[in-house]
Image 1 (tube, helix red, strand yellow):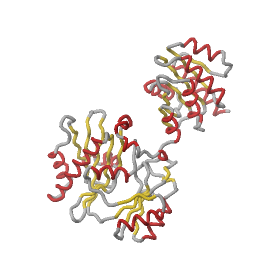
Image 2: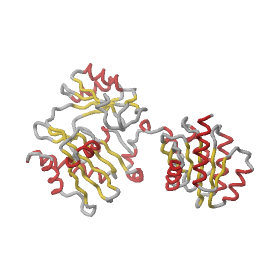
Image 3: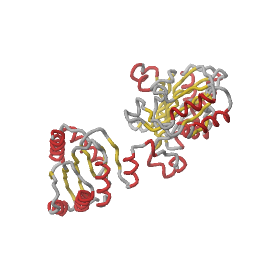
Image 4: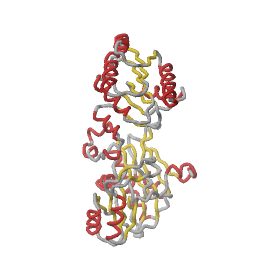
Length: 391
C-alpha cells in the first residue's frame, strides 16, 4: 500500500524526522489559505500522486506570491499527471501539498527497502540526491552507500554515523543526520514499511537536515494492525478494477496483454502467465480467485477481466484442491449467461470434482474451448486470440 507525500511526512514527523512546514489543500482557495497560515514568501505547490518524478513532469510549482499559489493549484488540481513512473495514462491529482520552500545547500539521498533476497532491511544513501536511484545504480554504483541491518539488533548509531560521514557532512550536520537516519528507520520498522525513500534529503545553510520529499510503501498484510495507515489509502490512485477486486477478495493486477486470465492460486496464476508468454501471447492480467471461489466470485472475476477492452480471449485455468471444479464450472456458466462474453473462452479444469465440472460445462450449451493440460490451454488461448484479432 502506498501513501501520499504529505501522509508519509506526517508519519516521519511523528517519529522525530524533521520536515518542512506544509499543509494539504483540495482547492485553489485552500492552497492560498495554507500559504498564508504557513507564512514566509516562497512556497512549493506539489501535486499529490502515488508516483515519483513529479518535478520533471511539471507536478511541482515554486511560487512567490499568493496569486502564483492559486494559479499553480488551479493548474494541477483535476488534471492527470503523467510521469515516467505512472505510464501514459497518468494519475489523477485531487489534492496538492503547499510547503515552505526554504533554501538549502545540498541534496542527498536516503532510502530503506525490504531486501527479500537477503531477508533484511537495506539502507541506501548517496551524496547525489534529487536523482532517480535506479539511474545512479546504473551509471555510478560506487556512489551508493549501503548497509544491511541485522534484525536481531536493528540499525545501530555507529552505522548511522558511518552513513553520515560518508555523505560528506560536517560534525554539526552529522549529528542532525544521525537523528534523521535513526528516526526514519524506526518509522519504517514500526509501521511495517516495505520501502521508504527520502529524495532529496537536504542540508540547509544553518546545518539542519530536512526530508524535502518522502515516499512510503507498506506491507498490505500488516495493515490490520496499522489501521491509522490503512485509513490513508487513496482509491483514486489505484486501478479501479483492482479496487473492485479487493472488495470481492479477488487478487487482480492489470497488465498490457490481450489474454485475460482467471486462475485459482497465485503460483498457478504466474505459471499460467508464463505459459501464455511461452506460447507467444501476452497476459492481460493476473487474477487469483482464491481457494474457495464461489460461482458469484467467478462471475465477478469475468466482469473484471472483460472490463479491459484489450482482452481478445479468456483463459480459465483451475487446479482444484480446496476449491471444486463443479463450483468453478457453475461460475463459468453463470458468468456466460449474465455477462455478455464476446471473446473466445478457453477452460481447463483439473482436481477435485473435475468430471462433474466438465459435465456441467458440456451440458451448458456454451461455446467453449476445453483443454486437459496447461500447455494445451495456453496454446489454444493464444490461437483464439490471434484468430479474434485477424477477424
